[in-house]
Image (cartoon, rainbow over all chains, first blue to last red):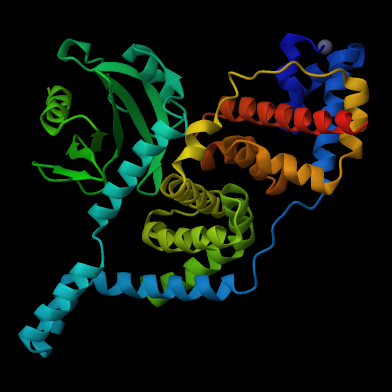
Length: 250
Length: 174
Ligand SMILES: [Zn+2]
């Protein structure tokens, strides 16, 4: 058996992921330790077996054309969905008002708004965290442990609060991905309910009232505060979810 | 999205279709589903492209493919994600190095293929990103939204499982 201290580093060494200093240290150790040298050899045998077996799936020929056309359609849809206001004015001036109204209603009913898409993403992230056993990267009930754990992993510092005083138990923190960027996720528990609170820097803001909705059986709150966006999602009822927001705003 | 932006989108992201399909295919284990995931990922990427500020476009796009694939798995067969990650419960001791090494070297493509395919989705993903797509630990961390330490231990566990499957199978045949 390999040495416990170096065992974890040998694979990283074999993957070329160690800095020079640590690599040299491992090499010195390997020269004198048969068990660790055997671990490295086994690691290399597996890697070369995987590399030599051509396990890569090739793109089916028809997919490229299919993707290209879907992309163009989406890009075009977004061009009309996001007309700058001066273009709306120009269109309005040149076409009969009724036609505009009809067209706008059709466009609205077909294209989910960016907010709808974000809500769907938030609920998916919540479900994923529950199902994939990826609820927490750093489990802790102490905000002074959770907050520093985010440092260096994301480009902002989320406000982490222990809220056991108001009945929400901090369980831990996690990195997640929403709205095209990495976000901080704080996990709270209340009775049997798990609450994900996502925090990330705001580009626009939600307005003072925020957004409250429910989707696929989950309650969802979004609000912004001090340049950050917050989104709480849970199967917990809406009034109690509002209490979490209130506690966070105090 | 205006025509120049669309052109930039296609120039930046279409070259990653091969990596995207490979990842989606390994995640979903189905040709048809992988195609759907890739198409959906590209459509989502159109929506998010405004927020992409240059840099590693492959990792950026694979993140979307990965998340699209996970949402897809969750929608269509939630049971896979709930039962997958039992690594902590089934920690196995490594077999002795001698015969294992021989078995690894003798493993056929079919055996490797079946072994990789049978791994839980998180392990499969880590190995595909590392060994088939050649991503660094840091890139895998970005794509899967995990700390690097977690990536490292996940890869180690994935390889341990893979070796276990291959050597179990190999020694039964002997
Ligand atoms: Zn050693």
